[in-house]
Image (cartoon, rainbow, N blue to C red; front, top):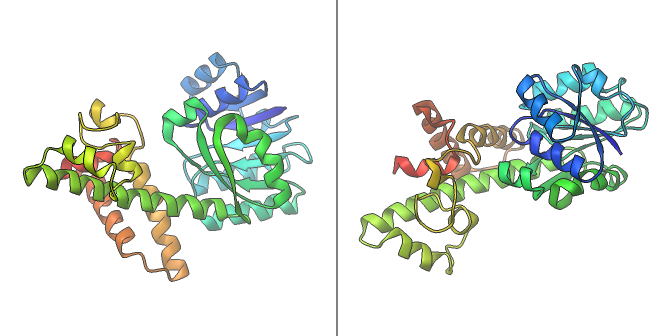
Length: 289
């Protein structure tokens, strides 16, 4: 299959490489020359513009920073430029409204499109073990599975267009709440006289079990290996967590949902980012305690 891949950053580069490993012909584009060079080294064919990259392909995959960029790229350079019948898969994390708008615009031009945001981070992108939450029609989802499988440990149909984005923002709001709670519990245990390692051994096998504690322990030298053991470098940046939380808060406001813990988690990550922590892994919230 010929697949255009637009956006080769920390996540997209590894994802495109896994498509090549699966035997696909990948036409890669990014604004950064370094990203293009890395993609070329991974076996991708590189192009100087989006329009060039999408010529003659069966599918277009995008991994872009925000909804405004997604809208601009698809409106100007993908819809009407890719071959008739090509499938569009936007793996960016963006607002639900833009995801649905782009799906409708694609449909009006005769294309099928899915929103397919991911969970798993950079390590999973490189390893091909991402979870994809896919919004779109049943027929589009069935076509998308073949493209997504080489990059995934799970590909789940969330529902109609935009549903993938709903799943992603809710998942990451829950993750942020879990992470803050995990950090608070570890810090409290230590200050109250129980070592964090001993607390980890107990709670990781008790009702306090959660991914942030068991698989991504945010305290250095405690429990599972994580960016905490590397100065909170790598992993999932706090700035990106804040982006996802703000998307969740916007959706909560639009839908009338009450999310008091989500709101407080957003405030905590806003303060952390304003203090200069945006480039650190989101588990670095532990350092504020």
